[in-house]
Length: 355
Image (cartoon, rainbow, N blue to C red; front, side, top):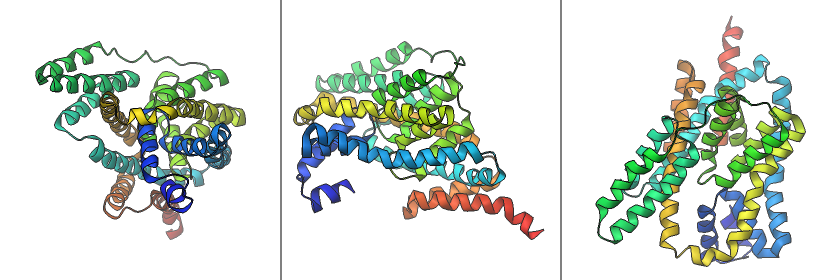
């Protein structure tokens, strides 16, 4: 959509410059779509454009998600809402799986990267901290490519188990009292270190809010993901929903600012470096490793959340049908989520109507 609007229709920049910016967004943490909008605004109107473009890209989605969060807090326990979420959750699992499949075909370009992805998935499932997995993925690929350039591939392989051994287990689980400042810091951290697709956000949210802080349940996290996927705008507005559920309107504002603020900073810092980044072999190797590790995080969280979403035969069928429609016919995920909601309502109320 940005390519059509910015390059073809308005001719604000050429295709080559647009691709340079796209590559730059993949080399810095944060939501790619939001960072592309910020890049365009900066090139079009400087610092004022940077702020206007980023804010206008985020604000509509944040407002819509906040309204849905308000309704969720007020009516979420009603049978009607439960029926809707019952049908949506398995569809969301299929949507994430489809994204994982599509991104995997692009990111896993060699057998080595495939082995790295398997190792990263195993480490994540064993409890290794997600930041360690991402960092190790980038480092391992850099070492491997340097070893290949020196004609010594075996040396690079030796580094794999060493890095894996150095990665300590995740922090011990401990329930922490809720506060707006801790909420801001958690989302600021996530926005500062998250590479890859917005779906990788699920792994970070689960690690922090479900396992470490225990502020959310698995079911609440799935509800948040469903809202972030169904509403227009960046998937990162899932943070807005979580913030509202935990802290009301103030929590929604704090969470949204926390997760999106790093994107503005990173774009401002990286913009002048774009021409150099695209020619750097080391930057490309780091990106390959981080992308593969990100996919492993996505796969791990999909496995964990599927157990909370697929609870019986009907939800299993919904997930399977949604996955087939996404992979075979590329149906817009929003329509599938709507279909899942209708199926959930029908599954609850149709038997009562027939009686």
